[in-house]
Length: 446
Image (cartoon, rainbow, N blue to C red):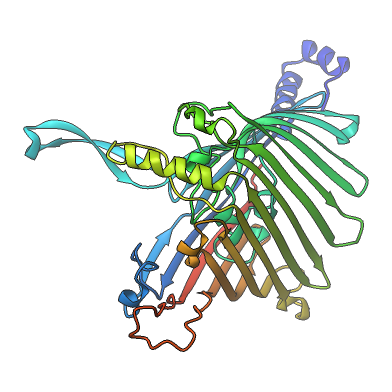
């Protein structure tokens, strides 16, 4: 809204009109302000052992009792503002697992000394904070700040109404940072049926890669800043040519070694830790069906050399308190693929089809954070499969209530007829069923 000279002239004549204009100014400010968010509250019962050693000696944990959890995986608040002339601001603060907290207590057992106690787990993150300048009606944009890295489906589309499962898609959330966000520069826009984005970012940190999570923790920094000795690039292109169908292709490339405050020795001069990721995903929303799928492939160079470097540093620093790095073996390749489909049952009920939705869905996925590499034989349990079945009920557009039964399972080892009491017999991993219920919201309040 713009204010005219006529309105200003009237202001000078009557106080009543001045009050009216002030209300219009407030209305204009509110029309430029955007406030929203999303969140999830979840209850889960896992019918398998919760021991962290359950994969090393699976035979010891076959009969362990089930265990339950309550959780707030993500609660996010989004605030945006349109300054005019193509300038906008966006921000998002995320509370993972309810945030965290500390308290100061006087410890009687320690001569009355003050001591800071960790009250609860969780994280608080500024997931987005950017300034955007739009040109040519949004066909071309420049965005700078803390931005989402849209590599893979789950990073580009991570709000709870954009996937059926109670938790975010497990495969991508395991092998890639999720939600992946970093300080960087983005060039993006939309031309007819195409949306494009190219980003310049700091590289990931290979010291935070792990065997079980691949590069998931590589985007985080334990310092008050993100080390940027290495740089990286990310791209994404989405096509909307077919009604109801979106197909996206995304990729990432950058060096990850030496992206820390520690300086390796000369023996690692030729090591770069180049990381390449390519991902293809799609979503179809038509004929009362929603079908989504993704395929992700990642290659990590110098995996053996960096694993050896990490192991040497783990031996040297394992007794240091507060050591933020993992120093784990790392695979040279990681993969993930998935497909899910849901049908809106209420579409067949005339009284409900325009007001409420009930999707009955199924999902299958496979992922492996150690798909290949020298140490792959040590981590057979990273090759996982998962099936899920459930419902998504939306009484209103912004609210979705989810219920799900999932079954995570593993390939059985080939024992070639060996007896189970043979010292060469390889014990199969125990399968991992669970039941989850969640209530979610996603939308704009203002």
